Length: 82
Length: 241
Figure (cartoon, rainbow over the protein chains, first blue to last red):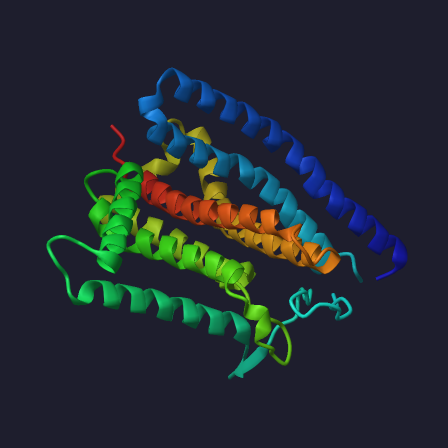
């Protein structure tokens, strides 16, 4: 692999995870906010809210995981390595 | 990737190095097998010991097992539904306990004291092969659950609200195992790496809170994996009206 491809791959791998974490981070923040408000208003529903919250966290997190997959492919299975 | 220079006996940082065993044409990661067997052995011992002398008023290990059973039943029942959750409870429970004990075993047991010729012992779930195998099992089981409960009507799910959803639902069948496996693998590997890097840089006090954070996320990841597996199975057996 020539050095310019290496450099570009490493930078792109960092950006893939870093930028991919922004959106789900904001999303998880507002989801947690909603859950906390819900629990404060109705403490007896805590178990149900927690289950739903974890499930929706998992779905949001999978977006970042696609970024992670791209980063790992760039680092360890680079198709442009030549 | 190579290993960092050897300074501190607990802080060898090795990524992508494995103890290879040759099995026919297959090269398998020996260290993952060893820790998996230890985890399976620990779980089996716990269950055998706990169910040996069962009493009406549970005490000790039996009490713990009954608590776990309750917990897993509630998880399965909320996600899969009253009708078929009994069939899938053993599967969900096995997934949850195996992942949970692997994660915590990888974090709590000082594996680094046992030296291997190459690679190092750790949580089996920090290896992508383990998590992909678990995720593919989940894929197979939700297809099986849907087909065995609803027959060919299972495929109505793909066009459920409108046929426009068809391509998305098909893509979903591929992204489900992908995200399941990479979520678990990424989280556990990241935990191990963060702790290893911190121990390598500052071998005192500082890594301890990060280790506790790692324990917390490991437990949550086991819960999330089991919940999502149950959710996918529940989605497949759900009746549309």
